[in-house]
Image: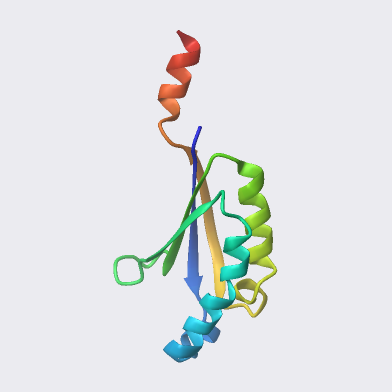
Length: 107
């Protein structure tokens, strides 16, 4: 079973005030956190030019929700949220092809 987690984030003025080199340094500082949780695949998506709901999406995929929880706790302890650079808007969690899993067990 594969879990997909979509985290909606909004960039705050502290992030927007950084120049692009400083932003890259902040992102690079997250690499040890992401590397420590290899069972979670993470993608970062920019949305600010397409919606007013949030500026960014973090899309994570994992087969183990506990690993996701540990990764997210570590991210919350990072400068990303501690400064804060982003506001957490919403977390949506689902099961990839969950209906197929249901159908295979219901048969």
